[in-house]
Figure 1 (cartoon, rainbow, N blue to C red):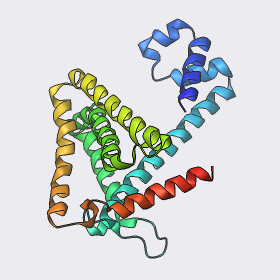
Figure 2 (figure 1 turned 180 degrees about the vertical axis):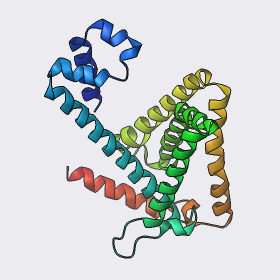
Figure 3 (figure 1 turned 90 degrees about the horizontal axis):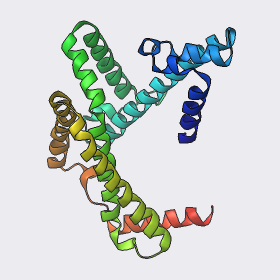
Figure 4 (figure 1 turned 30 degrees about the vertical axis):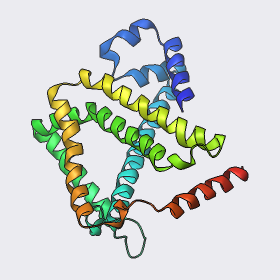
Length: 235
């Protein structure tokens, strides 16, 4: 995926003239200009259609991720149990999908007619770097801490359970350190406030003793390592 983005960037700079790339008025028509430069006429219009279809697919993927996450959290009793219910016929996470649909529509309508809602969504977009860095950074440290007794049992364990997650976690928190000074006060409040809201249900269901928050037993961790080793042997 990284190579595809790099190829697209290099090709765009080679095909389009510098005045088109630097002119801020051409931002909205960038793909059209690129399409006309690559394949004048119908080809350029087909590129716009492909872009629209790609946008729709991206939105669908985002909705799938959010609804499946809510479904899993409802099933594991870290959010209201109703989110873990599936459709009786299609067996899809119906409740979570409806919840995401309603929230998305409310935010969309609010952003169109209430300026403050639109500003909050924009600030949330810029502040998402905080959430990404903290989430992936903590995930990397968690792997190293949880499987610390297995790190030196093999070279593969050291590289893929120790060094690689640790390096990724350090890199994520370094990016967080670099990103925070670039955000304004409102963006910091929105980014950290959204994560703070998540602490409320987490603390509530942890206090109620949800099984999700229990530390995996030693046998469970060893079983996972054994399964990973078997998968590596069959590669």
